[in-house]
Length: 324
Ligand SMILES: Nc1ncnc2c1ncn2[C@@H]1O[C@H](COP(=O)(O)OP(=O)(O)O)[C@@H](O)[C@H]1O
Ligand SMILES: [Mg+2]
Image (cartoon, rainbow, N blue to C red; front, side, top):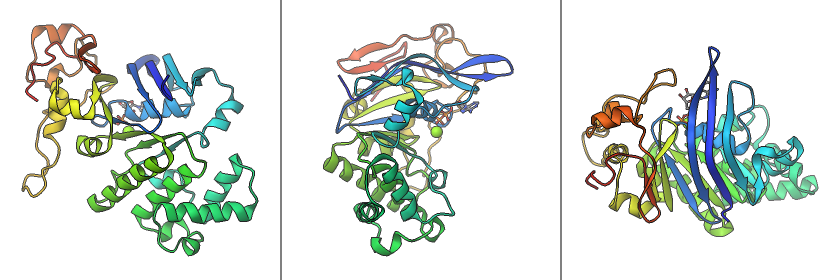
């Protein structure tokens, strides 16, 4: 049994009295010490999937309409609020693209980490402060014993991202969900933050779900990859297999979109068009209006998920006809 198991997850958004599906039949699992990458363009349902796992969807506009989420054998969808609170931020933690969504600008970063630690662990204030300094040093903040008293605005974007990672790690989570954690950072800092996460995983055996729109970032960091398009996983495989046996035209497009270093053209127009919005009615494969291989069948029939190779699934009527 994997640490995290997501099975046939369905999420719907209520707009103008209609319930529109936004995540459909999404399944994946993640083991201890393993990194799963979820990749897809903006609007494909990656963040909603992450928020559903964390129990953060809340509200009535967006809600889970089907499927199962199991963590360490527990059914997350039937937990009481109290049980859920004790797991979140303790055994599961999430970091976001924009650190200021998790950091409070009016409190010193140390105090925020200390509060987080003391919510979940029995420690004196002094012990929690020592732990906060230790965590800041672990995420390579220089002079941690001084910086612990800084306010968020006194730090650079990259440092704030590290502080948020320190905060997420303050309770040794078994699972860390990182939603576009490096998108707002420049390339050098981005690499440092990803290295840091990999390093922490080696030390602590954390399971990681890394979400990104950038297949380049995912390919360097993840053991396996789920490619999402408009609410569905359209291809999933171990990272090395995804690149050698690539089977979905959308994955091909994402791969072509990886910026080429030292090139004048740094973002190739690899996939024409855009992700259809929720309101746009679609028949057949959601990718068909943008696909070079489109046929009549694609416009009328949703492709079923098939096991294209062992451990490699794909949803496309033309699986395997795409040149890797
Ligand atoms: N709170 C919300 N209310 C209505 N629609 C939403 C809400 N959150 C997300 N959506 C819509 O759901 C779709 C998927 O969103 P999201 O999971 O954020 O995508 P991604 O993270 O892949 O960019 C988008 O079309 C988005 O506009
Ligand atoms: Mg998102």
